Structure formats: C-alpha cells, structure tokens
Length: 329
Image (spheres, rainbow, N blue to C red):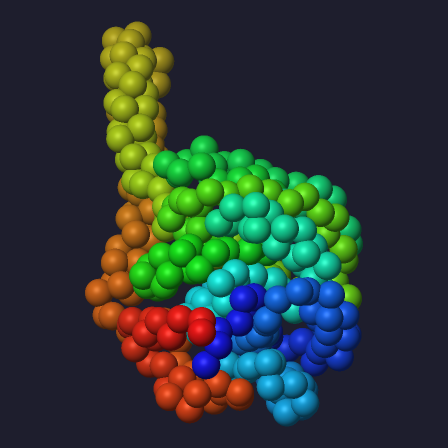
C-alpha cells in the first residue's frame, strides 16, 4: 500500500465547537496540496461530543484517521501517538483550535522541498492572548534557552513540519515527561523557521490554564536541564558567606553586649538553613519523581479505539513505538 507524502497530526480535546470549521479549513488547504496526504486526529479523552464529530468525519473521508485514548493523557502524549502512526514523508503537528493556520503549512512544505528536515512556525504576533500570557511565555522560553544545553528557537510552539528521518528519531525517545518542541531541537537535523501571525482561538476555551502552563514549564526545564540541581552548590556557597558575616557580627555583638547572647545568630542560621533545605528538597523531589515515573516502564498512552487505521493499532499499550510501515510503492 502506498504511503502518503504528507501527514497532519492534530491533537483534539473537547473541541466539539471547532470540528466543523476545522474540517472546512483542512479540506480547502489539502485541495491545493499537490501531494498524497492523511490526517491523524488524536482524541485525548474528550468528554464532550468530539468523538462523535470525529467519527462522522472519518466515515465521510477515509484519509481522516482517528486515534482515541482511553482517558486524557495530555497534549504532548497525543502528539507522540500521532508521530507513532504517521506514515508520511513529511509530518506536520498542529493544534485543532485553528491558532495554527493550515495555510502556513504550504510554506513549510516549500521549505521541506528545499532540503530542510524541520520547519517550525515562529510566532511574529500572537492575537487574542492576554499581556500576562504573552509576557510569561516570552520570559519562559528565554529562561529555558539559557538553562538547557541545546539551541532551541524562541517564540515557537509545537506547530512544525518534520521529515521522516526526524520522526523516526523522535519515535526512539520514550520518556514519560515529554517536551516535544525541545526534543525536536535535541535530535538535530537541518532546521529553519517560518514566521506567521498566530490568530486567536476560533471557539471554545484554552486547554492550557495557568496551572497547566506552570506544570508544562517545570517539565520543560527538568527534562533538559540539571541547572536547578546545581542551585544546591550556589546556595551552599551563599549560606557559607552569610554564615561568616553573621558569625563576625554575632561575635562583635556578644563582646559589646548589644543584644541577648545567641538569639540573633540562632534565628538567622535557622532561617537560612531551613529555606535552603526546603528549596533543594523540592528540586530534588522533582527529579526523583521523574526517575520514579521512568523506572516503572508504563506505556505512554493506551488507545481505546481507532478509525480508518489497521485494527492492530487499537491496543497500543507498549513502551515501544509501532514498527515502521512499509515503504512507499
């Protein structure tokens, strides 16, 4: 069976209000693409009418394929499931909320044909987002770039095109706490950007409230950087300097009888030691928790059902990605 040249991976979670418009935009875009294609919708345990809406789309268009999780496993895991089953020579990750415009993929394909393995969408303007979200996102990506030992482009999300070589390399990375955009930077290959204006969400609510954004940021930093662990050394040195200064002051105060003997010294020492211990206990806990998750060797996701995919794909509770499909005829 001939493999498609282009695969679109679209994670979906409670997007019933968007499905119809997404279908219209996809069909308009794909009608202009001079390549064979497939679209993989990954339903991340939706609780609304999204599964039924995707079922209707798949019944009408066999090149629309649906992977339905048994529960909500998260956006990054949904992307991973799509990459595990994408058969295209070029694979595009895009969100269902239409903030990743399908029309931008045309320019990505052009760059891919020029020889680039990764073409990522770089946000020039972000419409419909609060000042707080834009500011925190800008700060986070710059802090992350300073902390991790790889070159990661700024102002980019998961919206990107990847060649088959990159996708196969990504399939080999099976860690539980996933930060896909940094993982793509880690595997390397020839990469370039396509700048675009990110429109506001077409309908519905964001699936990344502040709590999930903080969790996502922690995953990104701890997955690629050991700098937080080195904070222990810095805090130790700082505490040592403060302890020397405090000791000199306490000795002077004791000699001149300016204070109750020992009180200030004890209070300062206890406060510094307790704060340093609590901070580093939390940091160590984050890393130990990740070790705990990895050694259990649980599957990244469990598929409850599939549409327009081989029936063997419907039970993917393994640590390893599916075998590479046959080459294009």
